[in-house]
Length: 334
Image (cartoon, rainbow, N blue to C red; front, top):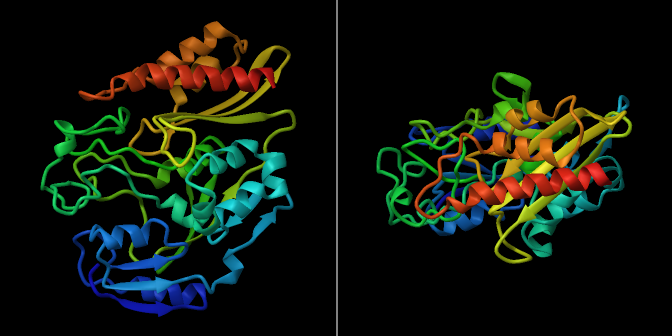
């Protein structure tokens, strides 16, 4: 681990000011915010993250609350711990897909530390990204992507480019994508809300740019809008072992059925995309149609139609299709 400066802040304004002190533009900000630290500290130990300064935001207690909004839905503070969020009665009641996604991730110990904002910013588990001795376009732009010809079994098949095929590892973000959540950010240019699907960037030729944040930008909350009465949701995760494992494929489904037809449908996939993957193609197939096996199969086929598998992960196409069909059946039968 490289040496770094450490400091604490006690207001959003202090955090933004401290976080915007950037000395080099190579990989964005050289200041990192410390919340739960379950990803950041690991990457610093591996010399994958080498910030010049770490700003501890854990004293921003106002960011550690879940608030029920007057118009319905929830505002989830950036420092809410994953375990608290997963078991929050309003989350369990209104948004079971989110609770299920959180409980399927990591271990109980990690969920007790990990935060909402940290999970939003969770970085890939690609073995080449996490090995500072290896080339990696995401870590060192222009150095190459050995995953193309190397170990790529766990990597992405949607949203990839010739520069990067690293998959997004989060479960929580897949559920929040399907719930059409918004991310609240405070920065040097003021406050703004960002749609979940707009927050993450595809790798293209700049895989080191993973999201739209600017140096000093502080995630303050995630807002989940209310669901229409009668809407049901479900999260299904497929992995190599039953616990403490990242998804090979996962599906978050939010569905409302009225008079035998699908009135509303939102679908997101995990484990297969370079970002939490919203499948509007699958939604288009299902919208207004009967929730049956035929339409579910067509939707799953549409969801993976643009997949570009590599040498070791072609199995993910069929796996993700089966995962989505199973999740859709679960919601339809609930």
